[in-house]
Length: 296
Ligand code: FAD
Image: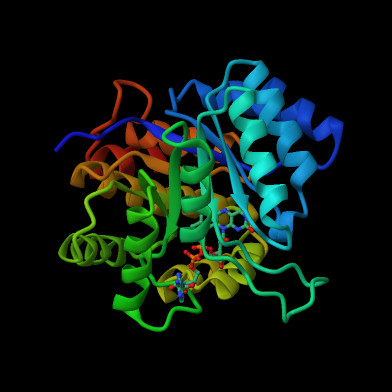
């Protein structure tokens, strides 16, 4: 089975104009050499980054990048979200990543979050087939899910509401992703489920974030990194090796294009992509030995 494309790239909206300049002038051009299908821009919990997300999406679009804004209801009403959807349509954006999102800490915890399936339905009701819509999927299961099969049931619900594909939460257990694909297929899901990949760079931050979002860091990885102590260079090299190996396995299995959580950094993704052969020949098919040689 062949890869569908090279990859896609996720960015967060920089808070400052200096941060946006850096993204546009160096990070993105370096990463665009990988020939990605599109890039996406996250949307802060509860709409906290609405203006910076819109500004970043608009700047990327003006430079000709194919961009997918992330969107969730958060604490906003239907009229506000409809207006944002129409605004994106009017300015020629044709992709969206539709999410429920999480509540920011300063919003009343009694506020009811609106599921991603409802947002997908709203996008379709407002703009028909204009947008290519991606939704989130969880190979290790969403932390609030009522159960494994229930989570897949609700994934199917949002795909049935009109989403075109899913992108997964990041994972380091490749078996979890393959098993998840099998269960999704058994549930009748036919849309592509793109593996989301997070490089291992700042391990302390990654551990904190993983605990909250329900992505498991395998014990052997945590133990190995603990051994490196303050040796950040060894942590970085080990992280590149582990994630390159993970990506090589995905590429060899014929997984759909990898979605990279870039954390607005070019170097780790470029090194991983080079190790795996992504961006060279439209898909990449490097074997394990190539990965081991180049990270040795
Ligand atoms: P949903 O699909 O609505 O699911 C949330 C939970 O509710 C799940 O447990 C599900 O099983 C359950 N559920 C779904 N439908 C129903 C129903 N009808 N009845 C009962 N239970 C139901 N967060 C951000 O704040 N900004 C971002 O930009 C962002 N980007 C992301 C990109 C990707 C690729 C991924 C994987 C996650 C992203 N997130 C982002 C995190 C995401 O918002 C959280 O994981 C959030 O908790 C769930 O969002 P969802 O869209 O998966 O929600």
